[in-house]
Amino acid sequence: MFASSSQPINAKDASRTLPVTHNSKQNGTPQTGKLVISPQFDDAYSFAEGLAAIKIGSKWGYIDKTNKKVIRPQFEYATSFSQGLALVGIGNKSGYIDKTGKFVIQPKFDVAGSFSQGLATASLGGKSGYIDKTGKFVIQPKFDVAGSFSEGLAAVSIGGKIGYIDKTGKFVIQPKFNHAQSFSGGQAKVGADGKLSCIDKTGKFIQPQFGECGLTFSEGLAVVNRTEEPALCSMRGQCNVGYIDKTGKMVIEPKFSLASNFSEGLAVVSTFGGHDPGLGVVFGNRGYIDKTGKVIIPAEFEDASSFSEGLAAVKTGGKWGYISR
Image 1 (cartoon, one colour):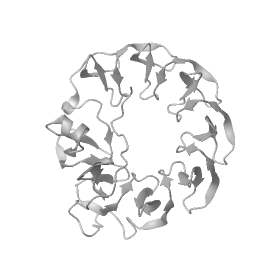
Image 2 (spheres, rainbow, N blue to C red):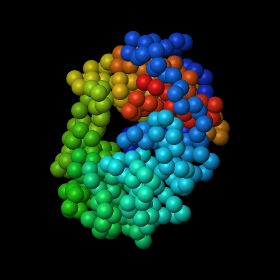
Image 3 (cartoon, one colour):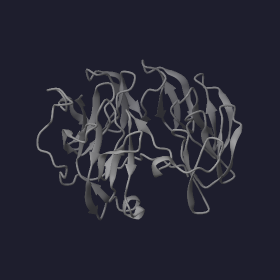
Image 4 (cartoon, rainbow, N blue to C red):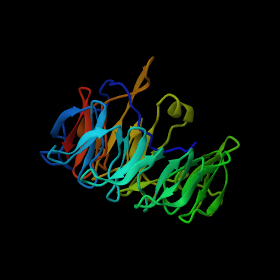
């Protein structure tokens, strides 16, 4: 019902199609791209607030940057720390732990989300609302679906339609859409009657800046999709993705099929790798580029995350480890 502009895609390894054979160190150091925590995890997330969620077998725990297991793997699922707390699952319930692994909010929710702007989504009995960091509902669970707050507003579904509420739970934009994204840069993409549109924070329909609604600029650049036939991108993965600056100038040509926002000066990119009968769209190996489009870390990873706190989670040989910035 809700949509994200950066859904993760798990894809089988394909040919290394980025045109690079050696690291360029102009925007790196001799340590850039070096494995500092060897690939050993079944899944792994980026570091946040000094810790990273990792999966060993069927359980999730947390490590620090020395690879010490600070919180032993014991959870059915885990998320990155945000505002001092991390959402974890134990049994069939969700709760929140601190950095010692102690439950600050007991696992009592059917579904929950990470904290954003002081509030987190939480569901009980099939309805969703918002809790504060004590676990108290400050917006009662009355919505069918609830999204995280972004720029002071959150998309919620009630009666089969989506609108936007503020932090008091009041509808600022009435529920009338079938599709909605979170606000970014004062804009959000919404859909109704089979048509996608762009709105501002009053709900007024607007013409999106630079031709795309809700662009997220990170470190001065934003990912844009210049695919002429949208179905080729959304259904087949054959995208033409590049980067623009805040004037709208294309600074990195749209030649990638997969691209992340810039973080710590680098962005993850990949090219189209074809199709697999069992997996569908297959992307090529992931590598990292700088803000000029130059490849800094070669495309040699099956999957990769953005750099955070000097490290990035990467997958190679079927296991996850961490490389240095």
